[in-house]
Length: 294
Image (cartoon, rainbow, N blue to C red; front, top):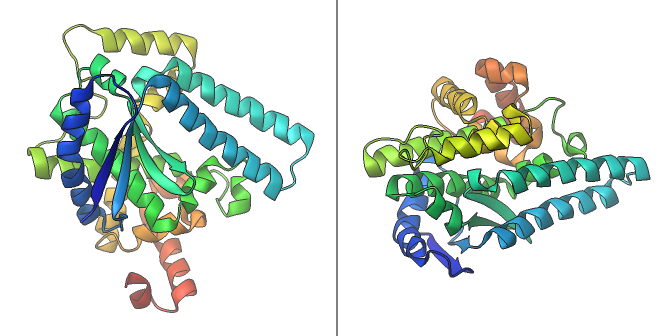
């Protein structure tokens, strides 16, 4: 069974560390059972303040840019464009940090869960929202472990097409949607219901809605909503249709190691089309569908 290493790197709101320690291993075990993805023996969960969170996420993105610059021999203009794009993403995170209570980060090849107790406190997170958060981030850890981080590298790379990602492919839709799909099932198993997507943990003060309106004024409204909700709904529906069409998660789980299997927008709207392409790839690599399923 997977154990969770809870690292308390901030003194803020220590009761959340206790709550997470009591929930994490049960939630991660459910994620592994539902997704049929491998999870390492130890999952690291780091509780940190805003500055440390921003620094860790920023360092991950900067390392991805540096790797791409070296691997693909990018010229000065390409690097400048990518740095500007990175700066824009960092500004979005800075402005909307309260909308993102946690993240999965690749730290020297190890997928780690990062959580900010200050956000949990300000948003009034209780047990249902903690389970929702742990399930989503735990699923990202499982996705990373299953494919050696291949899809995440294609997501963060400055040149994703050179890693096999098709033009227009939708990694955010699949990663977020799969995590939401699994997370809903975890919540039903542990709680008997699922917290609605985007439901604020507090409902009395209206602070959440005030913040969201403020963020939407500072950046594109669609970008602000994506920071909070991702493309969870569409991606979760896509995952559910693939699982139903193929009779399980075996074919879907090939995706995490092969970025070229990320669906295009057409395949998101038509999961059966993606299933045909994925099955053909499976046969090409293994020789038979039966071998791939094992």
